[in-house]
Image (cartoon, rainbow, N blue to C red; front, side, top):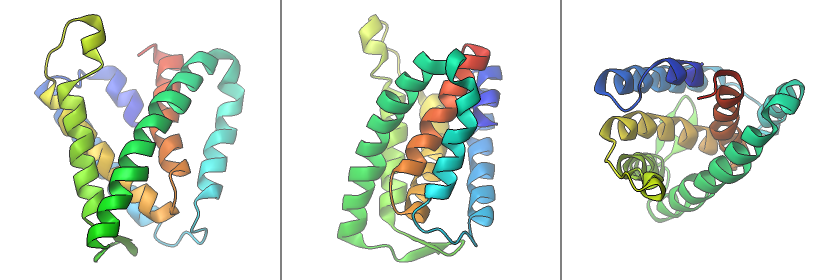
Length: 177
């Protein structure tokens, strides 16, 4: 849903970023409520189901899948949710509850760093046209909150990697975005 929206709005403009921030906030609340009673603490059921649903798209989306899932999604999730969030939570604990899921400052601070990385848009340095992207940073902060929550709920990074990489791979395959 969010990737489809991001394909229709300009996420680097304030109005598009606000739409995406609202969509990710709604997704966070919906995930919190729908996952509140989820029995599987490791999240393999959710992750496995997401992976299986992609099988029919594999022929059309192989390159996008490999890039977004194994490079972008895995790399960013290993850094932000796997390392940064875990270390901050280790230092400060997880004193808060959100829909029955314990979380700590690691979720917020890793989401802020994730958004900040997108503001600086380091990938554009490759093209030689570096421009800060504050609105991109805004909605990716909210995406980071969602991914951080999913990481806390699942207890690992597999579900956030899939949630991060699969929608982008599908958007690329379907919309060419």
